Amino acid sequence: MPKKLGLFFVWLLLSPIVLGSSAFLLLTNSVKINKVISEAGSIVALGSDADSLNGQVLGVQIADLRPLLISKTLKNTILEPYSNYMVEIADKYDIDYRLIPAIAMKESGGGNKAPKNTFNAWGFENGKTQFDSWEQAIDIVGKTLKVRYIAKGLITPEQIMPVYAPPAIAAGGKWAQDVNYFFSKMESF
Image 1 (cartoon, rainbow, N blue to C red):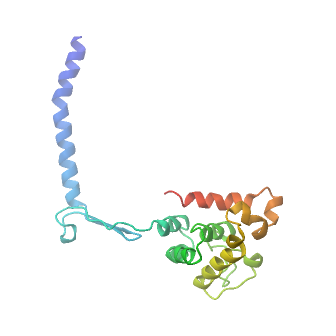
Image 2: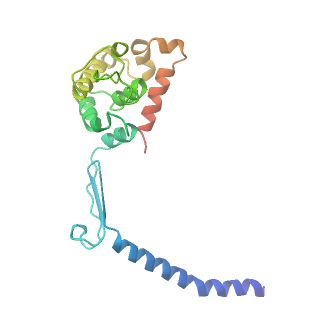
Image 3: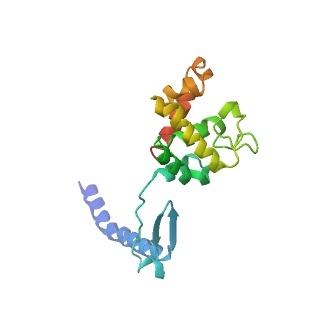
């Protein structure tokens, strides 16, 4: 019993010191932090400069997370800068926003393994189709997915695969599995 009582008094003595030190370190470091995080339209400012309004956190609500989700999936690929455009095209043709980037990741690692100067990250005509730019390619891919697949009721990767990548069926459906994997990456960070 005396040992427990001694530990209790040590705890009572050290708690204010630990809490005080922690509060001091937190306050001094928050004054030193002068960082602006700007990603996908969000701005968070911390620190003591004029832009931070005396250390208050400023924020701009992100209205649409889809470009950010695509960007994170396409990180370090040729197509990463086109994340916003992919969402625009998906909305234009009323298709799942994940479909264009997921197929690009499956077929060419987000364009990194696309045949040089073809802008064909989606394996159109087994990679033989050539586009004039990434923007043109993304638009044509979106339109093609809408007209040849979505409009015909082929919505999921499993439904799209027999037409888009028929050899994948004999391989156990790996194409659809991979596209679904990239879908899942775009559902969370």
